[in-house]
Image 1 (cartoon, rainbow, N blue to C red):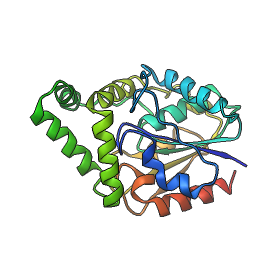
Image 2 (image 1 turned 180 degrees about the vertical axis):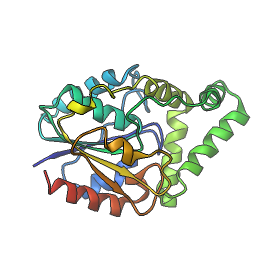
Image 3 (image 1 turned 30 degrees about the vertical axis):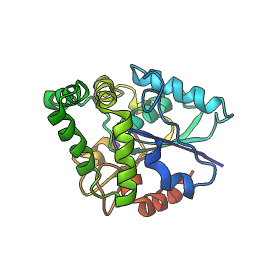
Image 4 (image 1 turned 90 degrees about the vertical axis):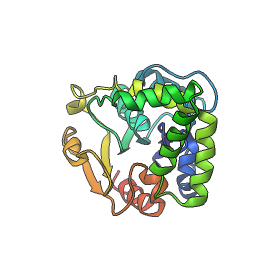
Length: 233
C-alpha cells in the first residue's frame, strides 16, 4: 500500500494542522510539522528540508512507496525528494507550487520582517492577510490555524519565502521518475497546467473550488481526487 505523507507550507497555519481532514480520512497517513514551524531550528535549503523529512520518515520505518503531497514549500520538498530519492517515492501530489523560481515582491518580504520586528501595524496587516488567504477554509478550522500562525510567527514565513526563491528543479524535471499529479484551483494565480507539462506523463486536474490550500479548503473534493489517483498507482 502507498504511504501518504502530507507536507505543509508557510500558509494555512504554517504547520501540519492544515492536513487535519486528510489525517482523519486516510488511515496511516502522516504529516510532519517542519522544523522552525512551532519549534526546532529551520532548514536553510529545500534539500535540507528533504533530508529532515526523510530522517523523520525513516525513524518510523517509512521509506518506500511514498506518496508525497505538498503545497508551496511542501510542494518544493516533495518534488526535490522525488528527484533525490526516486527509489523511495512512488508519486507526488503537487498543490500551489512552481517548477521554476518565483521571487516574491520586496513588499511581501519586508512586511514579514517589520511584523517580526514589533511593528504593530505591519503585524496586523500580516495577520489579516493570513485570514484573508484562508477565506475558503471552514470558519472553525480557520480560527485554529490563525492561532497557529500567531504561534509560528511572521519571521518563519519570511525564511520560507527566501528558501523558495532558491528552488529551481527545471533542469532535472524531464528525468522525474515518480508519478506526478498537479492540482490547480479556480483561484490559482499560476498556469499550473503548463507547469505539469514539465514532467512527462504527469496528470493535471482543475478543482471546482478553493484557492491556495486545496486540501484544507476543499477536503472532500481533494480526498476524492487523491483516492482515485492512488488507485492508478
